Length: 396
Image 1 (cartoon, one colour):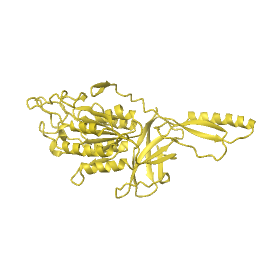
Image 2 (tube, rainbow, N blue to C red):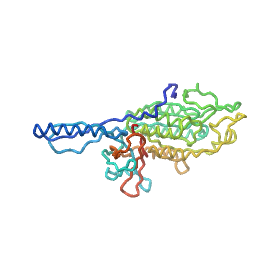
Image 3 (cartoon, rainbow, N blue to C red):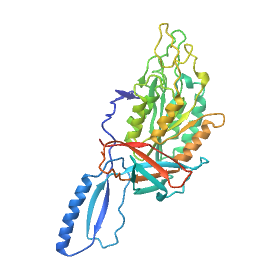
Image 4 (cartoon, one colour):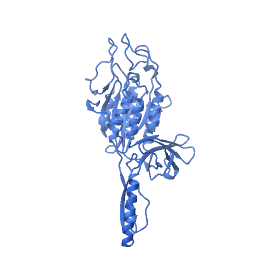
């Protein structure tokens, strides 16, 4: 069982994938003599039913329309199809966004099989659902103020009242929803203001109980410290993003090091994919934040015989965040002397406001419809790099 803000919820069933929305296509038939109409209508209805039963599955929330037929309408048949949507960002060799491409400039394959793009648009001002996941573990305690300030500016500029919505989750030895979906800047600012790192007592070398502190309710806990990064991505995707429609993105502020999560990295990634959610990672690494406790890196590790965390090799957080972002269609950024967290937020904002949305009905040539399908999207113009999700889960 999983709880956010003290509300207990059951874990989502991994066998149940996202619901597929269905759109109609209209096929018009010309007027002919009475007998011919009856015969043609019977044959067309039979063929349409057979085609609809064999139609492949995929994620869908956009219409696909058939080419116009320039004849006088007499009879209309409705056929249900399922469409896979792909959000993409294109950059040139100078890392500048390219936003003037057309559908014919792209080449799309699914599992190596060429696909026809039926739906195409540029997503510039389409409403957006955002989730901000902030690492508040002790390794981030020295950079938390900078993260809070930059996040405030980003949300203030990115979230348009009555159009976009955002939520805020913090994670350390617990995962807690500080603010549910809202377009209120005041509520988001209040949630950011409550971000703090866990407090540890000097006598016991163990985290003090913060459950009664203002702004810190119950959540998924890991005793003795920890950084529940995978749990945070999993919960945000399964409990919040999966229920939303349209464009969705998570922003993760962390050093990428997980300690103590119940969910695995693979589960966190697949859950974000099933929720059609892109994950943008901001790697904020403070090397001096490690080794402060127990003589080495031990955040979230098991307690030793003398009440101290044993020294452990430090995981490569950059590779972890890079995998999460790449496989969900997001992007990894790293805070450095040359690129501040404010500058990174500006790049993410630009990217989210300049995306292409492509839709296609999978042609699988008899291959199984269910399970995971790999997507490859490229441009016909050389020198351009396309950023999009690597695949999706269809109905089993």
